Image (tube, rainbow, N blue to C red; front, side, top):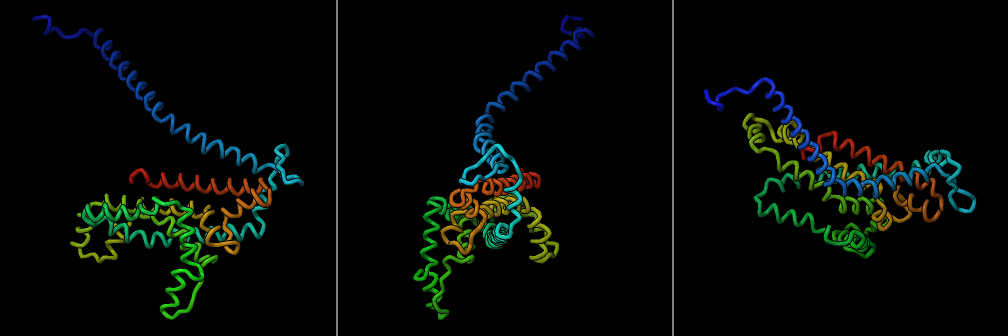
Length: 305
């Protein structure tokens, strides 16, 4: 028997296994360090632009407004949160929630058929339509809102169109309808893109199998297409609802004083009323809603998108 044919001794086998385990542990530690260093800019961004502002806002929400319009950070209390139960704040909050939910529903109603149509086209047409969806992002959001202000004004294109068909001149500017139109226009791409990403990944053979089993179009949609595209529905709804709830630019330009929403009221508390604790408490509640919505989004299977 040669040296190559001799089996390893019982002492050498544990030593080899131990060396292998140490090597694997060292590789895992090196990979962890490399992953942490790669994610460090993202952590720094989150701490700087999310955690620190959140702490500052939470501190000011427990402060006290003095008689001169300043903020006293020494006397912490819950007065600012108690004022959130006042009728004017409740009305603004419920109005903002209603408009945000209605905006989300309308965007879903428009965006889902469009996303399905987009996902089922051939690549050349699909890419061209995706460019059309992204075109609004190439211009300034403020400019686009002022464009809608011109269109919805007394002598705007929308009013002239109603008058042309015999319905008389209509002025939508400074109404909730104008705010709804602006919000749907502004946030519709945030609904379309997640829906498209979700629907495009669905295996078309599943839809064909449903039709082969004599399912109607509605049954195929309800039992096959909608459940499989639910991650996109949830993602698009959150990406639409959250910014609609705290929108400031669109309600301020198109709604005016008659359609004050949560974002406008928060700004007025900081700049006009000089009541930073109330503005901070409302901002903290709004950020809490955003945080809860984001957590719910990821727990509902957003990683499958």
